[in-house]
Image (cartoon, rainbow, N blue to C red; front, side, top):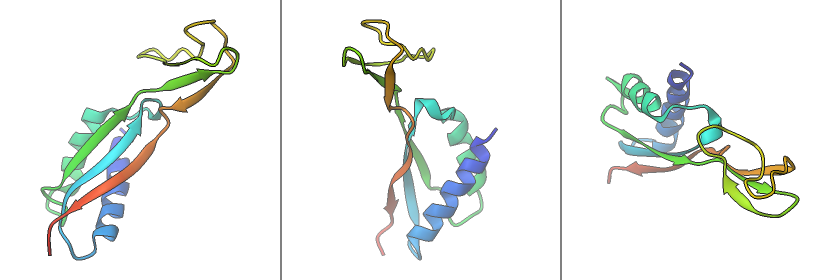
Length: 113
């Protein structure tokens, strides 16, 4: 369950960036290929922030589907739930991942001072 350590890192970053202000929510964008289970991440967030200065802060997770681009025909498409790294049009395996590897804290919502 690496989601627990991920939440610890997110909490640390949010706390440092917020300074003296209370964090209301943390927005993260996570790609499908990151092997993170969003429901588990949200559950772990509640455990990590309980009884801390982040208690009550919401973790807002945006899931990014994995997308590939074919270097042979130029088409793009999502790889779906079962990752198959082949073009869905020409079946070429000469593809590049163009989305789905993200793991970014995109924003913090902070309480007014």
